[in-house]
Length: 155
Image 1 (tube, rainbow, N blue to C red):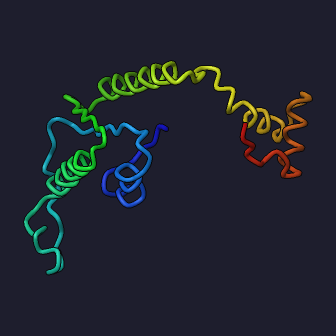
Image 2: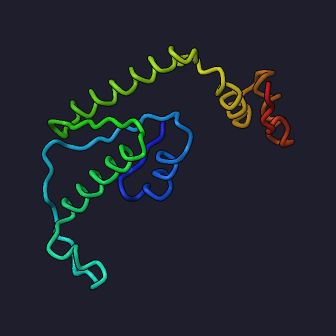
Image 3: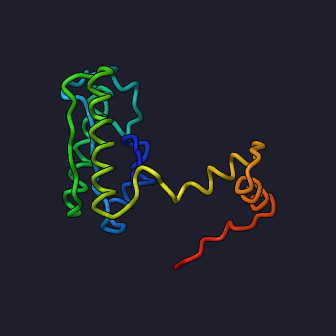
């Protein structure tokens, strides 16, 4: 399941899943190889005095390293990717690599990654809701309006 998480922002919502959830995920952590120390952490309350004098860059780096170590301690697979440059080309190359990895993973799991038949009903319904004239579009739009077919059925 491809998911995006952004540093400490998503730790509470996703790190629990990655550490203690089903063992069906590979976490990829991405950061620039050279990081700017950035702004200093503003005045801090006494109970977090250990942040006094630290920069936001140091805080983000500590969060990154702690997250990586947390996953390793839980025996969860984790990959670190460090970008030599933060520019359009290097980010584009990274995204292309991730897309290729998704195609490979889909092939290995026997998932149709290009036609995506599992999402076609939603596309058809959206076209119908927007006024497309086809029979499939009208039926799907009517099902949405009647709240039909919105039940997940098992095999």
